[in-house]
Length: 326
Image (cartoon, rainbow, N blue to C red; front, side):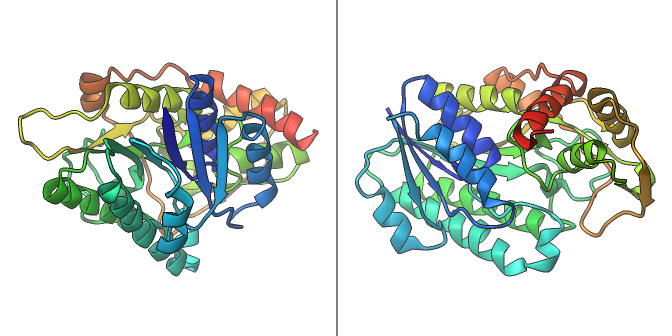
């Protein structure tokens, strides 16, 4: 089976492509290879995927409809994972246009591609826990209000969900949106706190602790995420009622928020280093806590995360030491 994955050189995209290839699928990977973070990390991921003859890569910006159409025109596919996006909460304060182009224009282009592609069956796309903003109700559930985002990144992800809902309603386009909660692990993103903390610990530099450490995150290990995405692919879109809109959104988290300072303790143990902590106030666009209610995804797809940070973070540190030669 041919499956398209946008954002194939990204963190989640790389792991997903690898898993699909191991299942014997032909994977068409798309990525713009932008320089939001070190492109060499993306090319290193790609070099691994390209050793498999069932992997085909095209460098394309999803905001460029002509280029996107041309890249996908040769292939017959029924499923697509749309993971490409401009990531990062803080960067959206500096470069909002990147989010408008990639996350809004790009998502709309993907919807049009899928709508007009013969025999297309299911679009699985990335949303984010950021859509919950400063929600005070814990844990976050999919039916909670999400109309008060605290970053442009969050606003674009909610807009994507709204566009997808509309395409489901108007064109019966089956879609599953996944609100990821702080995904981490080997080959992760260098802009994430766990990566920066690990780097600074190993290099003997201070680590910046925002909101004076009074923060909690629902850290989700990459292996759990990939298992969940493959299950959604295998089972397909869920319709609870005949004729219902075939677009649904699910949380995908660990259902276990961790104190930020506990994460630091786990990393200290894994690196055998003691952190020099630099306490700072909350940053614009950040939220104090994330916590995924998994009731819906457990009921429909049986998703059950298995990996705690006590197990997952040392796996990242081990990989990082090898990757950074430390």
